[in-house]
Length: 512
Image (cartoon, rainbow, N blue to C red; front, side):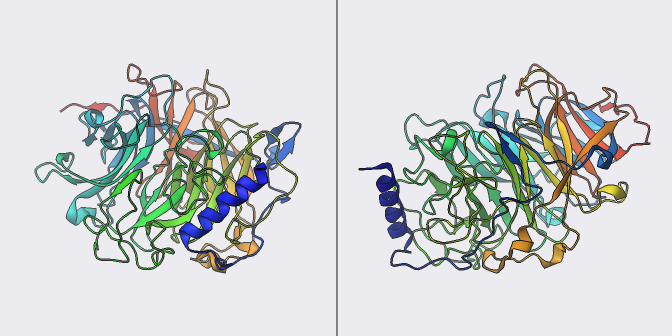
C-alpha cells in the first residue's frame, strides 16, 4: 500500500469515529490562510526568517527589577482580590507571593514539589506550569493549578508522566497559603513523551469558563508512540491532545457530560467536579471529548485574553516557524498539516511543500496565525499578552511576546511587539470559526523591543514568560540557565517600564 493510501485509509477511519462519514462537513469551509502575507515568516535556503519592521521602528523600553531568587519563573498573575499581590509560578513546583509593598514573601503560597515528577535540571518542559484564580476568588478562595505528576497507575506502560489539572482552596486561617490537603484532581492526562505539555490555564473574562491548552503529546511531527497514525493527535478529534479545552468549574450539570471511551489515556471528573458548557462545539457527538473547544495545536504553551475576552495562543513550532493565533470556537489551527502559514511535510521537517490544501480532513478551513516568526530570532516562542496598561502608550493594543533564546548557553532572549492591522477592532472578532473572514485573521506587523538601562544592558538571559498586574502593566520572567536546576537561583521578575525610567534595586525578601 502506498503512503498516500495509508494516509487516506487512516483519515476514513477518523471520519467514521467522529461521525462525519457520508460527506458532512464542518461549517465555515473557506480560505483562512495568511500564506504569502507581507508579514509572514519566510522560508530561505533550508531555514526560516522573520519579517520585522525597519530598525527605525524599534520600540524602546526598560526593565525594572521586581524580585529575584527564583529557579525558573514561568508565570506571573494576580488574584483579582484587590490586595495588589503578585503570584509567581516557578517550574520547580512553587508559587511565591510578591506582596502589595513589593516584598517577596519567603514561604510559598502553593507547593506541589512532593507531587511532581523529578525534573531534568539541564532542560525540561514539565513541572508546575501555571495557576488560575477563580473569578470569584475573593469570596471562595478557589485556585487551579496545572502540573506534571508521576505516571498514574493504569497509564500505558513506558509512557513518561501524567499531567494534572487540580483545584485547591486557600487556607481559611492564612490568605497567603493554600491548604494543600484541599486538592481535588479534575483531569489527568497521560503523556507519552515529556514535551508539549501546553499548560498556561486561564479563565475567560467574557464567559467565565476555564480554558486548558494541551500539547500534541510530545515527539517530533506529532508521530510515534501515543500519536494517532496517519493524522497525528492534533487533527484527531477523538483525543484531547493538541486541543484547547473549555470547562465549567461552577456548574457540574452544564452541557452534555458523557463517560470517555474505554482505555483512553486520560481520566476526567466531568459531571463530578466540573461541567461542560452547553455551547462547546462537539457536545452532540459522543465520539468526541466534549471538553474540546478548538484543535490543531502542537504545543500551545502560552494563552492569554485581551480586554475584550479574545483568546490568544502562542504555539511552539517544529523546526522552522513559531506562531500566535487568535482562537475561535471549533477552529482548526492547522498542525500537523501546516506549521504556521507554511505547508508541513512529515517526512521532511525542514522543507515545506510549495502547496497544500487549505482545509482539514473534514473539509473545515485551516486557520492561520496572526503572528508568525522564524528561527532566526530564537528556538521557541514565549507567548505574552496584549498590552492594556497606561505607562507605555506606544505599546497600547500591541501583543508583547518574545523568544526563549537562540542558544542553550548563554541565554540570548528577544522581546517583540506585534501591531494589529489599522482597521482591526478587538470587539468585532467572531466567537465561532464558522463566522471568521480573512480579515479577522489578517497578519500583524512585528517590531523589536529595544531594552535599555537594565543592569545587564540587554536581555542576555533566557526568557520564560510574561505577566500582568492589576493595573494591566506587563512583567518579564527570566532565568540565567537553560533548565530548572533547583541548585541555582538565577530566576528574576522584571517590570516593563518606559525607556527613560531609572531602574531600581530588587526589594528585600520578607522574613517570616
